Amino acid sequence: MQGALIYLMGPSGAGKDSLLTALRQSDAKNLLIAHRYITRPVN
Image (cartoon, rainbow, N blue to C red; front, side):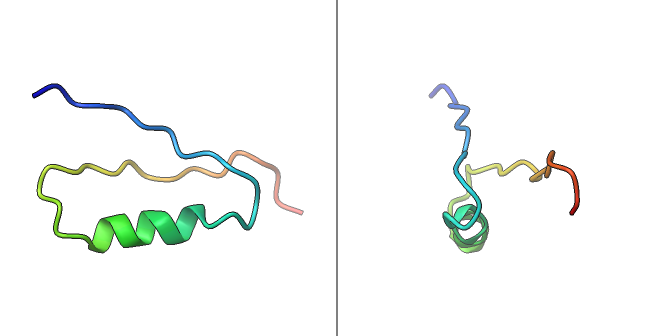
């Protein structure tokens, strides 16, 4: 089976971190989650 690359994008407060946390806690053995990088300047 071929893998898939999925980009998770959305505005601030949309729940991206919550979704990534839930995916990391799931039992999916074939799931690889890359590290999240924040590219906007710190205010």
